[in-house]
Image 1: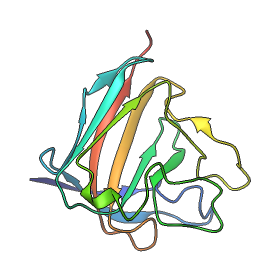
Image 2: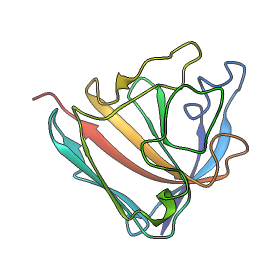
Image 3: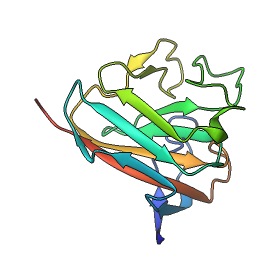
Image 4: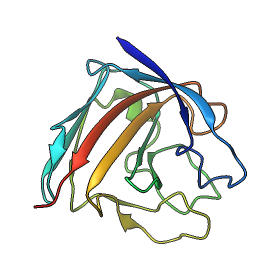
Length: 149
């Protein structure tokens, strides 16, 4: 397994504007957490594969740094809904998303309406984590590139 330690500013950028970043160890292991294909166009299907059981939180960061929590425990302060029940997620091995169909409320203060996640070309980073945000130490990561048609 390849491990890369990086300083991340995107994970909590919108939750606390005064936060300067977290030290996260990214775990790049496609046998545990992987995205396929690596390059997508609008309308394509993205498959996320996970070894089971796995951690319970899934989010994606867009090319402009906006975080979309996709799977999470109930949060009374966040208007979005988990795309699958939180308790069921650790036993799910595969997700398939349409790049035109995946919507969620972004993790931005004041944003209450869902948006299309794959709304612009660029790099999208999916993180599978044990906890969402607070004192996050490790995250499985997979990345995809959305290109113009």
